[in-house]
Length: 301
Length: 301
Image (cartoon, rainbow over all chains, first blue to last red; front, side, top):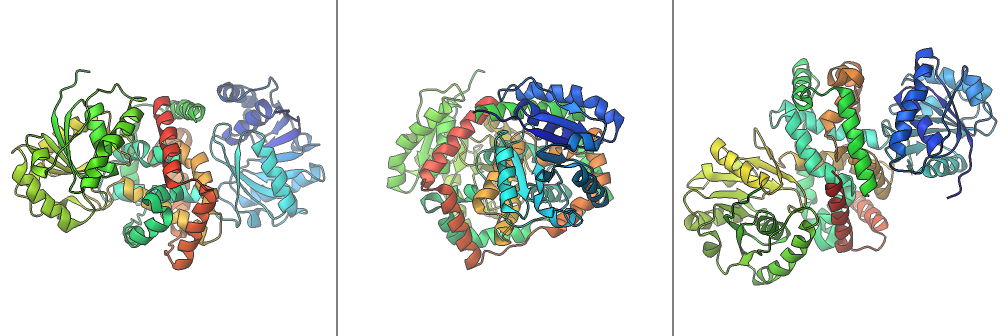
């Protein structure tokens, strides 16, 4: 594939922003300019992006270019075809940032927000040109996980955004309607709610629930989604047959699912349970092990 | 590992029973005797088990022994140390079967039910020796998926059952309390409920929701469970930090999750959506592709 090097900006250089920057530069071959208001964050970009680029080299052909860290937002945004915003999840802060970005950006630049919790209609409210604004939510860490969830109101802008992320080896999915938590966050919350209920109800430990998921449904869901899973559970008749014979029992199961509250007792049980599961490994060590296994799976598929 | 060849019975030779039989024989090196009341099912065991044994050869050292198909339940159960029951999910039918099995089984044989939907206390009600009865729910197909969910009331019996399944390369998880759907079925139902809600609410298509899961959370859940996922989402402070800063927003997200009903309209949308996603591939073709990808992932881990 012939790659077109584009000018791309990354605003906010935490883990998500730095991961995007590494992907844009190493896999896209783009000229990436990064800005973060924190000098400490700016100082860490190069080293952290280099580690991520090393991980990317196991999966993709990577280029030698590295993201360039800028001293101002205007410098990072100037001339960029796409500006990826990764600020903290606060509406007032993001809206103020968009005013700055619009003042500095080229007229046809796409402004893309990595927001996980906020929705397009709230974020876009004060923009001069809301049609060029999209939510583009990655799954953490963006340089490894293929999913990018997109929402916007201009089909042409969405099409350009889809092409941009797809050219990076990502899998863009466009929502037909905005939803808080998009798709992945809502599915994750639904799963965790029942996982917490099983802990709260004393059915199994935190570690055993995680072990059950990873060795059962989780392994399945790396291959087929929930709808396809039930389609294949319906025998030769597929989904129609499943709904016919097991639809009513599925609705009873849904009605029986837990609705836990994060009371102090439940929180304490979760924290103690995860300490048992972590068995002395730090968050950093566990995340590194997760990333290694993710890379192994991505290579196998 | 030195393997001890045991005498093992499989009652009910549908997909689950045949998959267990192939695993017990090929990976465990056990002498496996299979019974099914249907002559047609009995006639298919050898060919279907051979295909599964071929899949197992990619993952394990397999033996040359094949399951033996018996003409009576008593013949299959006689002398077996463990009897794996895989009858249809009807309480009356399973209870009647257990009376027959108890009459034929050795005094210390473990009777294990593959039930996905029924619970220990209902199934064990009429048994003469309920303490040697366990539910041992595999994740389909049992010869590939590691998870086995166990519940019973006698710790010594549970320990023997755990050792039996672990020696087959399975990952046994013991529930502290029985639960309809065990762990995996409840987590799957929770996920699918929200996936159906997203379809019913018009947020995304069936195919796009499956695509989002497989390229995002599903890929993650083949590596870390839901609790560990949120632990790693809490930064260096882990679960405690996550609960402190994002617990309230997670509870609001839970409250916002959908509670769909499988109305005729929703069913039609699911069936049409899965047809679009299947794109002409039969259930058999899709299941074979799923199994190939599962084997590739299991090899990579």
